[in-house]
Length: 133
Image (cartoon, rainbow, N blue to C red):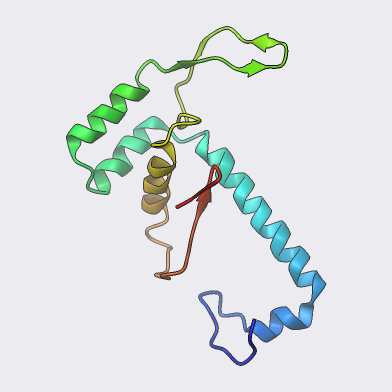
């Protein structure tokens, strides 16, 4: 980080982070890890009705909302591990794990939920389920 540059959205000078040294690195690492853990938990807990609402509010055509609703209707899954797999059970909340569409749907939800507090920054990125959004 170069000294003497303008502050970012956090209004904290680069020099402050440099003065704090290793303590700043540990603090930021801990903070970002907690944020990512909470986003991962949120990924598995997105209420379906909230998903439909956010899709519509984002301008997604109703026919696509209905297609996604059909994909999520009566969802069932199993858990596989080294000793076998569980009985099939229904999943009524959260996004589908492993689906290529799920990170996009999560981005729509996060975009709508953070709309009121978000500052415009062309370089801001969010991470969810190991995908850049």
